[in-house]
Structure formats: structure tokens, C-alpha cells
Length: 239
Ligand code: B1M
Image (cartoon, rainbow, N blue to C red; front, side):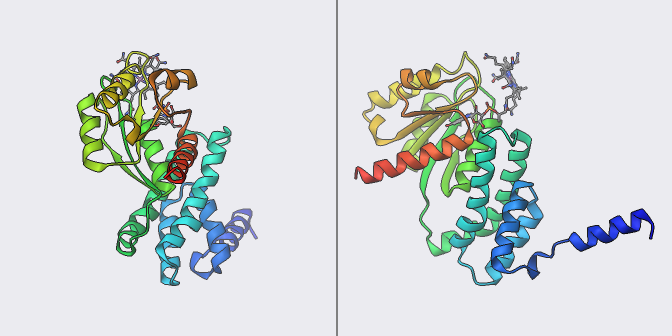
């Protein structure tokens, strides 16, 4: 047999038919597919599990969120990089798009709600989008108010959406001080303590986060998810 035929044969042998896998193997395969950013496979896997009478929140937590948690860890540890994480997040979104209306129907409780935006003068949004997607992947509802946001936009979004968390992103050393303007305005209006404030962006650091009065600085999207989960839990525990 020619080598190319052998290779084709091997390929066909390895070709995985998702619908033929038992649940546990399908879940494992979906984690791998998410890791590889395979959107169509994730959509197919999501539909198969729903057809097998899996509850939407179970599909979300066991197939998608768990898969994304693994992606988040490898991103944090420098094993995966931005392009791969964006692909994984995009695949995750494919599954989420199928689940979202079903979750809304069953009234599945969100982990929390976050308003996020890039600050005034700054139009960088790739990192912010990544954070939003990873937060959604972890079960948060995210309201993304976009880029170049003056303080009024943040305050209006807080008033309208009443989130648990306000997230601000900045990529320029010239725009990052604007985060303090927003937090000071919240303090002036007496609403600072109503929200958890997290900040992030390449030029920021822990000290800066403290100096502007944020609850936490998050170095990347994975840390943002972990921090948000911890802070929301701590808040709930404090009543
Ligand atoms: Co801009 N830019 N840029 N740029 N740009 C930087 C930031 C820069 C470091 C490049 C450089 O000079 N080496 C530099 C800033 C220098 C400084 O301030 N010290 C710079 C500059 C100077 C500029 C312009 C002024 C250039 C010019 O016009 N002369 C201009 C400014 C425009 C403006 O905002 N007013 C400008 C424009 C642009 C583009 C439009 C071309 C484009 C943005 C496209 C877009 O976002 N849609 C762009 C890009 C792509 C970059 C670089 C190359 C990449 C940024 C990026 O997307 N990184 C950047 C150089 C660099 O960082 N290597 C650069 C990938 C992204 C996943 O990472 O955004 O850091 P990042 O997000 C991370 C974390 O920071 C964190 O999690 C994310 C995921 O892990 N994170 C959060 C971010 N936000 C968070 C929020 C959180 C938590 C975590 O909670 C709320």
C-alpha cells in the first residue's frame, strides 16, 4: 500500500465520531476540542449532549466551563498564547450561543454580573474581549460597554445593569490614570462600595490597582475569572 494511502487509512481510523462516544469520552473530547479551538465540534458536542437529555447548565459546567478552565490554566502558565485562547474562546462562544436561550428559559443562576469597558482615550479592546469571553465561559453575565468610555458611561451602565463587578481595562500609560477618575466619581456618589472593582491591562500592576482604589488588579483573563469568582463569593458570604 502506498504511504499516502496508509496515512489516509490511519487518519480515517483516528477520525472521531462524536455522536458515537459515550458521555464521559464525549466530555473529554470536548475539552480537547475546546483547547484546540474547534468551534463546529463544540457546537456539535453541545447539541449531542442536549439530545441525550443533559440539562443545559450541566453541559455548560461540565463540558464548556471545565474545558475553558483548563485553557485558562495553560494560558496563565504560558503554555497557550493569545491566538489559541481567542480560538478557544470563540469555540466556547459557539456552544454558549446554543445554550444561552435554554439557560434563560430554565432560569439558571448566573455566577455574577460584570460591566466592563476600556477607559476614555483608549481604543484597545482585544484583552478586554478576551476577559469578557473567559468570564462568560465561567458563567458570568457580561455587559461590554466597549472602548473610550468617559466616566458618565460607566456610571450609566452601573445604574442600568446593577452588576456585581465593574471591570476597567487600559493599555496606555496615558489612559490608565483615568481609572481613578471613575473610582473617585463612584466614591463621590456614595456607590463605590456597592460594587467590586477590578482593573487590568498590560501597563498596570498590583500597586497601581491599590493606588487607584480598585478591589483587585488582574494580570490576565484567567486571573480575572479566578479573582471575580473569589470576590463575588466573599461578598455573598459577608451578606
Ligand atoms: Co497599541 N499600543 N496603540 N494598538 N498596541 C500598545 C499598548 C503599546 C504597548 C505598543 C508599543 O508601543 N510597544 C503602546 C503603549 C505604550 C504605552 O502606553 N506605554 C501602544 C500605543 C502607543 C498605541 C498608539 C498610541 C499608537 C499610535 O497611534 N501612535 C495607539 C493608541 C490608540 C488609542 O488607544 N487611543 C495604538 C493603537 C493600536 C491599534 C488600534 C493599532 C491596536 C489595537 C486594536 C484593538 O485593540 N482592537 C493596537 C495594538 C494591537 C497594540 C498591541 C500591539 C497589542 C495589544 C493587545 O491587544 N494585546 C500593544 C503592544 C503589546 O501589548 N504587546 C499596543 C493582546 C491582549 C490579549 O493583551 O490587552 O494586555 P492585553 O490584555 C490582557 C491583560 O492585559 C489583561 O488580560 C488580557 C488577556 O490576558 N487585561 C485585563 C486587559 N484588560 C483587562 C481587564 C481586566 C482584567 C485583565 O479586568 C477588568
